[in-house]
Image (cartoon, rainbow, N blue to C red; front, side, top):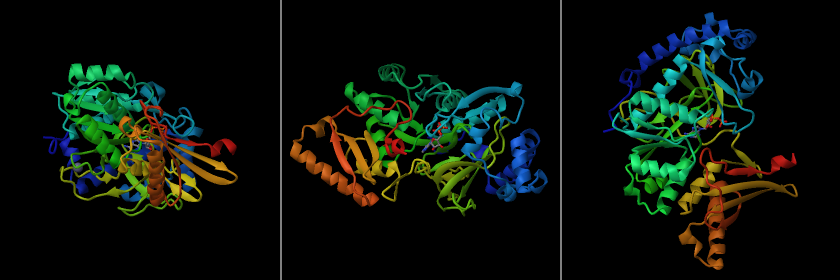
Length: 437
Ligand code: ADP
Ligand code: ZN
């Protein structure tokens, strides 16, 4: 059973007091390390009037300056590297979803601790050396493939380094080699589910038992959809290149938020406007401090992911703090006619109303008015309907979205297979207003 299996039980079930002691010891050392080795950190700390001697433990974390994505871009490529280049063994880079790519450096120690985090995630969903782990995240600069690949090796599972794409071959290997765990983005998992069905397979025909899906926001509705189409349990995993990659946090059997590997990464939630830390349970911007990494140890890095932390006891026995599924990044948020809209809210409505997760959102400005167009693909079954019923369905769906968001969209139900599928991170939003700016 997955419930009580841990990869590193002494860490994953460590009493809070001990964990805080461990974090404090590591933090003190880490602050000294970055101050001594990274001119940028030294300058920032001097500017803020804080020295390594002021940091005695996690209670002093709030004294440290923040670091933002634009700092990373300014310091590109290696201005924040805290060890000589000869000590580094790997680089990865962000997917560039929101602008210029950022490059992160890893020592062997950094790769090791990252792979341990992914091994914890695989073990938490029931993975063992008996499993066949199909890694369908992209390999290369993107961290998805490398992270889960390393974690799968550590667990001792048979690793299938498929990378993303080539869907027919994915399915052939899944079937022939009996994959039991699938790792990819949720949008690609949904696509694989659809492709399996088209090839005539039923959910029970594959040997998969669990999926580890992340790297992009996805909704509970999407989770249920994938679980049904693949006949598996679908688990969330979160991470970002700046902090290491997938496995910064991972879901357990509870499927209720992700345990943060807080022996390596201390999470905080801050008010994005005042930059003040918020109490546990409040929603705000997620910030991480890497207390173990050598080469690229981000200190109070502002992720822009909007999230909530919880210390509520978890039935899996892990004591690691949990974070809720992030709703999306502050920069994913669209402001349409003055209303804040997260694409994930629209996804929730679509799936609740029985539509497919294949959709596209287009925002534009016409005569100084924001427009919101939602294109939703019909399934073959839905498509046989007459024009009259389609128009009624569009109106009904627009009403449901209006109830959720408070603004009226134009809904377009489009024929099957007209919206491009995603093999990695899905691009669902086109904001044409940016073109006019
Ligand atoms: P980029 O910033 O270019 O997308 P990354 O590949 O490092 O580069 O992506 C990290 C980001 O992906 C996170 O900051 C977060 O916004 C998003 N992300 C990763 N995992 C999840 C998840 N499980 N749920 C929601 N968002 C996620
Ligand atoms: Zn748990």
